[in-house]
Image (cartoon, rainbow over all chains, first blue to last red):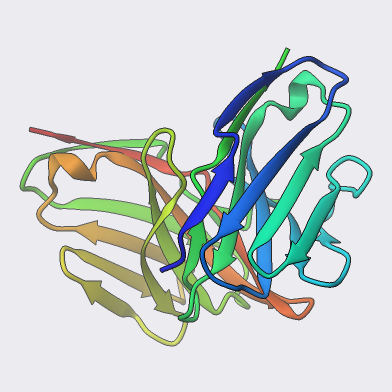
Length: 114
Length: 114
């Protein structure tokens, strides 16, 4: 299994500011995925980050709000820009496992915007 | 439109008994289904998956059953243990835009009573 480290684990931020979340994987992976879990909701895919190309965003998510970097095969960042209280969520990084239909997650970043 | 639904937000079971967690889906193009367990302040942990061409997959105390005609799957935990107390997410896999994506349900909180 892949070991995924996410930083920070939690943060409380002022509205209007930005936060960058880091995701480090212990092995090289082609695709990295960023999810959001709002309170009481399911995990929702924000975007897919492929090394060497622009991230692919899901409907309802835009690059200006959630810019993503993928500088190499083991690292990615997600920035939550110009934050509002509605951005308060858990943000999760994920990678595919080596077997089909087996995805691994970081421990998540719990973001509270005040 | 919620393509993966977990209609029971919570479930309580006595230790040693069977826990049955249910999940319904709407998209017949899903090719794999997965179950994840999530403890507080941790990321989801992969438990078990099943291909859409199978009707049962077993791994130790965990068995997943798939009823394609009803678009329904269930996770059985036998016997249930207090350490199984967590939130369980059902997820479905769909190949789209050159990659596999996972769509999650809202989760069921399982409490196993000692």
